[in-house]
Amino acid sequence: MFKLLVIEDDATLFNEVKDRLSQWSYDVFGISDFGNVMQEFSEIKPDLVIIDIQLPKFDGFHWCRMIRSHSNVPILFLSSRDHPTDMVMSMQLGADDFVQKPFHFDVLIAKIQAVLRRVYNYNTEAVSFKTWCGAAVDYERNTVSNDEGSVELTKNEMFILKLLIDQKNKIVSRDHLINSLWDDKRFISDNTLTVNVNRLRKRLEEIGLGTFIETKVGQGYIAIEEEPS
Image 1 (cartoon, rainbow, N blue to C red):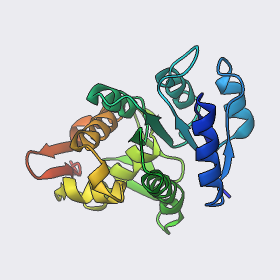
Image 2: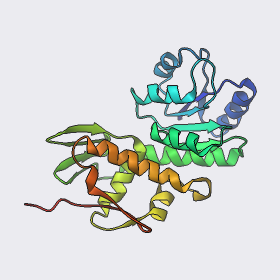
Image 3: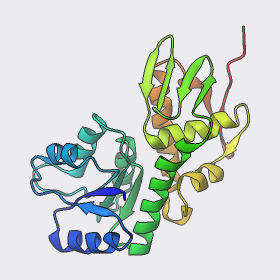
Image 4: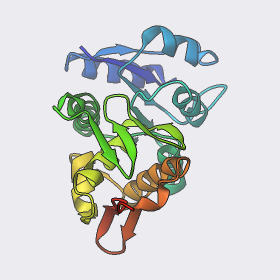
C-alpha cells in the first residue's frame, strides 16, 4: 500500500481527497502542524506528496524546496492558482506534476497512478546501470557520476535521461517524452517538458555534461554520446 501525504489546509477538501484515495487502497495522511511540516514528513515517510501552494505560515513552494533538499519522493502540486508561472515554478523546484483546482477526481487519480508507476516500476528493469559520456548512470540510486563529481536527480529527471540515453545519438520526440512521462498529455502544458529538460541540463552541468543533451527545434531532444578520443 502506497503512503500519500496530502499537505492541504482546507479540511473539507482534505477529507474528500482522503476518502476518494482510500477507496483506491492508498494510505492517506494529512498535516496537523503547518509550521512543522518536515517533522511530520520525516515521521510518515510517504511514497508521494500532494501539496497545495497556498498554505498557512509557509507556502507550498517553501515546503517543496525543503522536501527536495532531503528527498527525491515524487511531488504533485494541487492548487487553485492557474498562472503559468506557478506551474513553471513548481516544476523548477522539482515537482513531478501539477493539478489545477477545481479538478475531476479521475484526473487526480490518473496522475497519481502515472507518477507512482513511473517512479516505482521502471527501476525493476533488468538494467539498472549504464555508462554514458564516461559517466556512471545509476537508475536505482538516481545518480550520475564521473571524475568531476556526482549529482542526484529527481525521478522525472532520471526518467528523461534514461529515455534519451537508451536512444543515444537519436532524436527522441517531444510527444514520445510527454507520453512516456505523463499518461494523458491533454492535462500537460508543453512548457512542462521544457522545464524538466532544462532542470536536468542544469544538474548535469555541475559535472560537465549539460551540453550533451541537445535540443532539436521542432523535433525533440537528443543525448549525444561522447566520441572516444
